[in-house]
Image 1 (cartoon, rainbow, N blue to C red):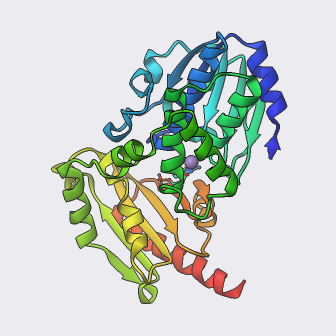
Image 2: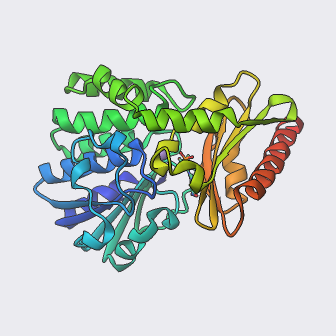
Length: 323
Ligand code: 5GP
Ligand code: MN
């Protein structure tokens, strides 16, 4: 662990009101962990608000408390600020000002690339973010009610692909069991997260996947969408899951999904068995985990960004073969 839980416990004890920030383009992990932390702190009599610079995608609105997440301009900005699941300050997006104006800060995260940018850090690469929040809740002696258990369970399910990825440990499974005992509804959460998609999203995926490209004898797969291609189908959040479908191809080790955002291109990377895509992302000032990472290319077209991503993926595969 980088940092320590003890410092976070003291930070919680010493403050009364907290702004909890989730990362840009929020996923289930950052939303479920952030809302659970809010509920835990409120149980202890603290005041909290949850903040995210982007709207919560419809798919995660079922997470208890997700509807209360504020945009930075609507937030109070309390003196104590906690970043959740944010590997670097850039991940706070336009909520960074709230973090910078704070009297005291904390950073609870599970990215190996985390730069421990807060006054109090709790970073554990081998845990899901929700595991860290659960342990913190236990250590604080807060009651974990059924809704909090559902927040944490939704975060665990989304971070682990329903307990299917290599980041799952016996501790993840043990905590999942405890959360079910506390009232988390496994079947309901899985259905809402994975089997409840708007038709536009399915069509957007079909459009992108029909145009996928394979390189390096099928070991690399890419797909991309420009804004004008995405628009008829729905919002950018509908792109979630495309990169995992690319990775599902039997020959693929590295998958890259690229989407245009104005003059920039957001690149999502996934690896299957051995490649370390966090290395690729870090070389582009992005970050993430060995098997799931991302970065942004600035002032570039999607087609140009794809060429670069393929070259970096080829380099990564070559590096793996040498190691
Ligand atoms: P996704 O591709 O789902 O957006 O992100 C996959 C993983 O990579 C997540 O754990 C996320 O935190 C990380 N990630 C994606 N984009 C960036 C980025 O631009 N910077 C950093 N530091 N991490 C990123
Ligand atoms: Mn995460």
